[in-house]
Length: 100
Image 1 (cartoon, rainbow, N blue to C red):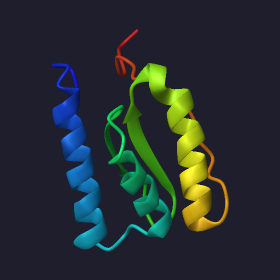
Image 2: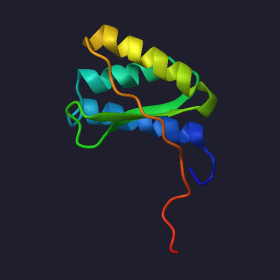
Image 3: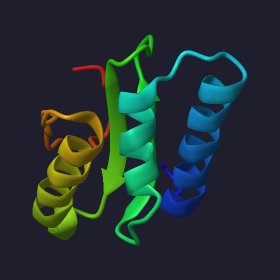
């Protein structure tokens, strides 16, 4: 991330999700649906489950100017596949923790 190699980082996110899904079996239909959708988007660098899995949260690196469109479309896609709407939150990448 510090070297601004977002595309490489995104590929690692997708690979990490696949590993957690297939090798550790800690993903689920809800999280896989989010990552599946993210893979179809050119404006998403990567996505994966986060936390302990089993239906919790996923994170996607979405280009800032595409967030509204991504949010609208992921809600529709997810609702169609899962049967209820997800919560979608916008957050920015920061510089990390620093000493005061």
